[in-house]
Length: 326
Image (cartoon, rainbow, N blue to C red; front, side):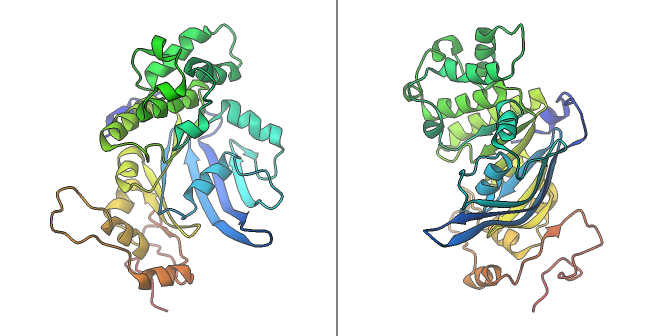
């Protein structure tokens, strides 16, 4: 899916600075049992500018969703969940910030789209009321809330919105519920939307419709986007910059075109090789070699390849960007 035309037509976002989000050396430790813990995220750094579209990709368990939830302040509120490093949102440091500060950002400035709408939609509340909560959170005087509810449901690609607003989540299809989550996220007019696997449970046709709705609404509002997905095709069509994660770390980053067209890290290359097409008849499915996984898990390939370092490869890399043998 091509999105370049829509992005070029996007209105300029209001600027307090061109950089909206800066994450540096983010680490997240989660409890696993009564005494043990796991490093779900380790030394992750990324930047999101105003109006940017950034993708975070990797396999299940790579740490991409935990990274997204840490950025939104949505990790479990337990003393055993430890977050360190830096998350600076529009100049404000959020690591260690009080719950009220996080709530202020989530209520008006950051929207989340989750992969399981039935889990996050209130089953006892009508759709219109749930969208209305985001509009009221904006505290914008003179707004006709009913009209705004219908407008954002329409922006999210839904039809017959006046009827739909009076329905409950269980009365809608999976694709419609996912679009409702998009409407709820954009109704607060956020500066950043974090979409965590927004189309995982949908069939291919519905997936394309939902992605088109997300693409068009982000373009219309000029909102920054972090798209988290294991689906490389989705990220390739929706983002301008990409971060590839494995084992809680970023292993490669650059423009989406550069990383997808000329991957340099062995894991990124293997990940791209594992993508198949419906036209690949008679082609054996590729799986990432055990030897490569062993190197990754042992930390032998713990190097971040940044495509922006033209002509200045990481010291651990060869001249062509290959990881040196130890």
